[in-house]
Image (cartoon, rainbow, N blue to C red; front, side):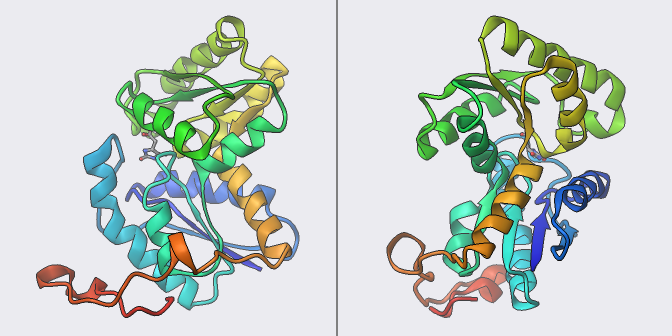
Length: 248
Ligand code: 5HY
């Protein structure tokens, strides 16, 4: 099978880290295609960045599925564009936040999340509510680091993430801790080993869940919530995105 992993921001060093994780956890026979759009925000920090990442995400998702991807992973902890991609294609589309929360709910009695900036906290709290994990989510913490600090000042950033992971375990009683940014994907193994608590990276979780869904022969239901977008004209610069009414 082929899994397309899309980093919706345009920072290739983060895409490289994401690819490394995906390749490390992929089963034999699973091909990983990890990429980012050429156009869009260098990092996604809040709603405006997320909105402006969507044309690139949708373009790469449509192309990747047309080229044979059997599943798509959206490698951004905001799960940017998750439902729009599910409307557009029929192969399973997974967000790393939803995948990480699902995994955490099965290995501990409550989880905390450690993300980057405080502004991401309400976004992730809203996702826990949307996905029905609010009973499991103890707290969403922020390490107070910009997303690109994980690329540009990775040692200091990793130490701040580590401090919040330790606090989540000691203060929140978290029995699992989610790394709330795709750029943290390379930190999970060491933190799990140090703490003895599952520290979950959504990239790895989403790739394995994608393998499971494809292996089960499951595709997104195209009736109801994720039916193809209704055909209509899109004006101006977005004309090329006009829906045809057919699944891409
Ligand atoms: C992410 N931003 O996973 C999110 C998470 C965050 O560019 N990739 C980003 O920290 O808001």
